[in-house]
Every structure is written in structure tokens, then in C-alpha cells.
Image 1 (tube, rainbow, N blue to C red):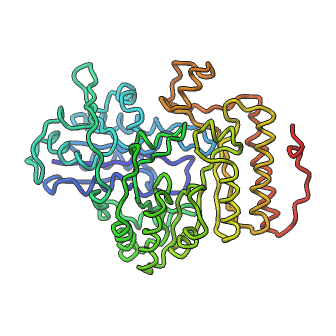
Image 2 (image 1 turned 45 degrees about the horizontal axis):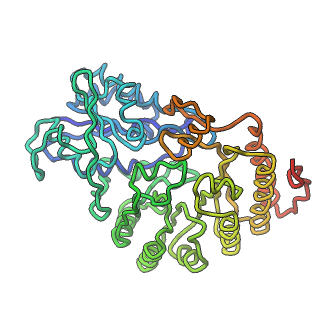
Length: 460
């Protein structure tokens, strides 16, 4: 039996930044030895569609898995990657008509039923985490003799969405995997060296310290994808993986995929101690929670290899923070900025602008808050970037439900393609703020005081 595992394209406008397919790599390590396995990450191919065609023709697989990681690129680009999944499924069905097509991945999980309707070529979908049941699913579909699992039919495998004539049947979700039991990466099939030298700005290699999030931000899907409780991975196992990648593949820059890397504080500090103890000479980045950052744990993180810190404060006013249920206030954001400036660590901040219910007053407050952040970082020159976005809306989040109830959103809004809240009245604010940050960054880098008058400081 033959299996082809495919990561479909999810890079925007020919971006050279690559991301190691961590989820697919872990699933690949679970494939039984009596399956002839092949893999293709279309994101690292010069001509991905020609390469997929060649792989299908040469290998004639019995089953093809399509991993769909991202719906769209965010970062101000209102593009959709849906065409990548659609075209891949159509190409598979055209070239190997009798193969079984299975889809999964974070983006697929968010819209599983809708995507099964939209893309009839997909035979079966895997919703959520697949590590506990992937081996059983392959054994059932390929009619293999299971090697280390009890036989189980597709009808009883948790998290499966499947076709029954003209109906779609969704199996209930199963338990979440313990983070210390996640399978190893299949570094032979998905070689880290294919990714490590491609990127200019971000780390290609992700590291999982935990899954799940208990913060309940009003727009976020992490609780759906990973659960509402944080499942922690042993710091020793985390660093074992980092050390393996450093020693065997020379990887020196990592990014923690955790929704928040510095929560809970005791787990984060234990991780830093383990990294310091190993003396690996590596660098890493991650998203941090502002109100959990202290001088002590930031100093420890820098000694452990932290090279850049990412914040996702998301709102520049207390009203916006409350709307998004961030459980933060502006002072928390300013205190974190002050601390990172004093410590001299490269800092990136993410904010959403033109939020629902904005007024001239809240825009003026946002403007003044932005100036305070720029004033904190300017003299030190440690602000890598402030990234502005409009808020991307997803189905069934608390914020989406609120906007629907208030009549701002149509009840039948289709969220599969990117839907952003960006009313005309303050649509220009994102560009105004970006221009101000650009000017401040240039002046800071050249060590020149920026005395240009800001029209927003006195209100609009």
C-alpha cells in the first residue's frame, strides 16, 4: 500500500519565508512500516503543482493526505488559500481517480464540514489533533493489519468527518493527547535542512511547549483548536527536541508555537532553567503575555537564548482590550514595553485597529497610546516593528456573536473567505499609524530626534 503525505501551499505572493510542517511530520512518524510512504511539502517547491503531478504519476498512491495549515495570510493581505486545497484535491482525483483523499490540519478543522461540501473530492476529514488515532485511521482505510493498535472501523474513530452516500457524518471528538506523548518528528521524511536556510525574518522551525489556551480572547480560535486548558510539555522533552535539531541538523533559531510562551510562569521558568543548563548556544522567539512578564523571568529567558519577543496586545485602548476580552489594561502593555526597552531585547508588537464601536475619542486614545510606546522604545532602538491589522472574524467566537446580535454583522455571513471588520470612517487609521511607526523607526535607527508634529496628539 502506498501513501503520499502533502502539505498544500500556504505562502503568500511568493514569500521566501518557510515553515517546517511540524504537525504533518509528527503524523508521518506514526505511519506503519508496511506502508510505502512518500511526502511532499509544496511550499518548498519551485513549481509545486508540477511537482505534485509528478509525485502522483510516479507513486500512484492508494491514499493521499492533504494538510491544510492556514486559511489566509492575515498581515493585511485579504487573500485566501482555499484554492490551494481545492486545486490539490482536484489534481489528485484527476491523476489517480481511485485513490482515497484525506484532509486535515488546523485550517481544515475550522471549516471541516463546509470544506467537505465545497471540495467533493475529499473522502474523509480529520478534525483536530490526529496523533492518537492516525495510525488506526490508516489501518482502517488501507485494510492493513495493525501493528500496535487494536482494529477499529472508521465509524468509531473520534474526530472523523466522512461521507455516507449524500450525507456527511461527523464523529464526536476524542480525548486530547498528553503533550509528553506526542510523537517525534519524522526528520528523515521532512528534513529540517530543507527549511533552515530559507528564511530572512522568522524562524522556520517551530517548537511546541504546550497546547491549548485558557484566556478566552473574544476573537481567537486557539481554545477550539487546542482546548481550553493548557497541556504542558515537560521542559526536558522540549529541550531534548531542540538539542536533537541543533546537534543533528545545525538548527540554531527556533520559534515557540505556544499561544503564550510565558504562561504559566513556573513552567516557563523551568524551561528557561533547562535551556540554560544545557548550554546549547541557540536562539529562540515566541509570543509573550504582557502581564506575566517580569524583570526576573525576562532576564532568565534572555540568558536561555531569547533573541526577540513578540507581544499581541491587540488593542491600544482599555475599551478595545475589554471588547476583545484580553484581560489586560493599557498600563500592562506600557509596563511590558518599558521592561523590554530597559533590557534591550528586540521587540515586536501586534495591534488591531478600527475595532468595532470606535469613535473619534477612542482613535485619539489609540494614537496617544501608540506615541507612548514609540517614545519608550525610540531612544533604545529595540523596537523591531509594530504590526497593524484589522480584525479577522471567525464563526462562533464571542466577538462574532456580539457583532451579529448588535446587527453589525449579517447572521448569514460566510467566514470561509476572509472577513475583516474595517468600516470606512476610520479605514485610513491603519495606514496613518503604519506611516508614523515607519518614520519613528527610521529616526530611531539614525539616532535622530523626531520633532515632526503629530496631528493626532491633539485629537481628531
